[in-house]
Length: 305
Image 1: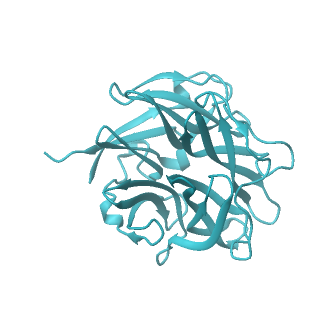
Image 2: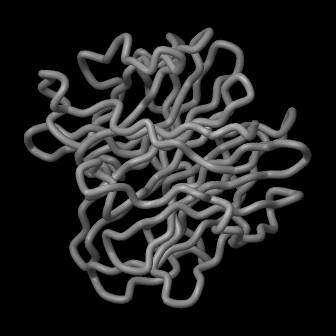
């Protein structure tokens, strides 16, 4: 597979919104109709607080049709796991109900931060959300004792069978330097999750992190895009395949999307991929330098002739 970069498609500089002053982290999508997708992302206000909003994007015309004038989900109550910011990670639509799996931010004292997974629910096509729970839906366990259980990708396999791939901290090297990989969880309803501590994507030698999985199921194969990092601030896109969704083989050479030119805003980093299949063609929403500070980027699959 090869990719053609379309470039930066949504930036806070395009709009004069109080809630969106910078960044456009972790884009994820909800199909509306035809070629129109609702793209959720994390923007930050002038106080650097993360909130979730969206823009409606036409994949045929490659243009924004609408943007949310206010956040669809704001930080939680003081003292909760998400009181310092929220970031969208993925969505699942079940009939007319939309599940938003999101990341809750909280500053810590002995380590830099806590990143835990929350769930919010919408019944109006994502125009607003209400929290399913005031607490995280992934829990600290003896196998996973660190407060980085985050960036999930959720897929409903069939009735009473859901899969989740998520980022899990293995250890803190120091207060500013966590190491984490991608683990696997299951559920019967998408709300209550069983964490067996199984690792899906392991760290390679000298890697610090693998992060933000995005999964498609095609031709009997689970295909995962993610990002990996050896040096802080230098994420690249990786790729893996699995027959059962549990045991994965990394094939990063198949990712085939690389750092861009300096003027494009993704010459130092390509991170947080979200891949969809639209009308037989794949599209990748992603972030560039500085963890998405400039906004949301897009690439499309180059189909073989």
